Amino acid sequence: MFWCRYVTWDEPAAMDRVHQVIAEGADGCKLHRSIPMEKAMNNIVIAYAQNGEAIRPEQGYPLRLVVPGWEGNTHVKWLRRIKAVDQPYMGREETSKYTDLMPDGKARQFTFVMEAKSVITFPSGRDKLPGPGFYEITGLAWSGRGLIESVEVSIDGGQSWQEAQFQEPRHPVALTRFRLPWRWEGQEVTLRSRCTDETGYVQPSREALIEARGLNTRYHYNGITAWKVSSDGSVQNAYA
Ligand SMILES: Nc1nc2c(c(=O)[nH]1)N[C@H]1C(S)=C(S)[C@@H](COP(=O)(O)O)O[C@H]1N2
Ligand SMILES: [Mo]
Image (cartoon, rainbow, N blue to C red):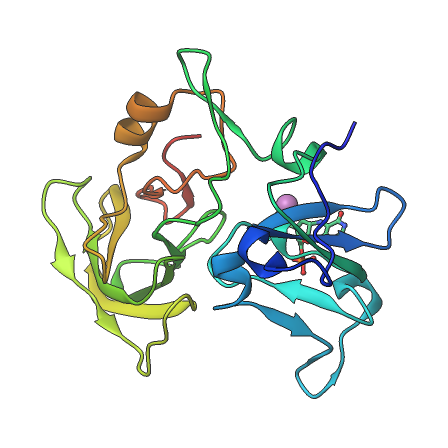
């Protein structure tokens, strides 16, 4: 039931009609995704190596796509074919999956970009602080739209926010380490981080995101994470 036209290169002006490339994997399901030409020509990697060695079988050996800033599902592993076509393929991974069902019953489609997100990695769920004293809050922030511009941390349940420091250098669309010194007096507190990227996009609260998109979708969940530190030092997800 594929109704997109393949573009053959010997046709005159074929290039004008190439709007998408279809990347297909060699696994049993032949996982495939449509990638708009603009992205394909601009900011995409066909990777054969990682960390100085051939990419490992579970990472897509011998070749995989890396599509910076876009949802993991587009990073097709065991790449065996790239087709040029004039419209999206409407394969399983962009219709039945990787669409976002909204509360009104409509679905967002081709929501490729992963929007800005951050998480505190210390202290975080299941850590146990040995007692009151000095700690360094640290975590990671990233944005599919580019550079992380700032990260704020709240130690009072989201009422006030303090600017965290970055571990430089920062790179666009890459994990960015942030840190904030913190003295824990031993009382119950809730820790949150909130990042802003270079486009001015601010990571939303969980409540705001659920209000906007409902509860039917989670592929692009980037709400603020809250860690509750109890007076005995144990740490757990405040929303759990
Ligand atoms: N061929 C193929 N590529 C694939 C998949 C797959 O099932 N088959 N899974 C995708 C999904 S859903 C994700 S999240 C990423 C995971 O990549 P990683 O194992 O390097 O984290 O691979 C993507 N590429
Ligand atoms: Mo995934």
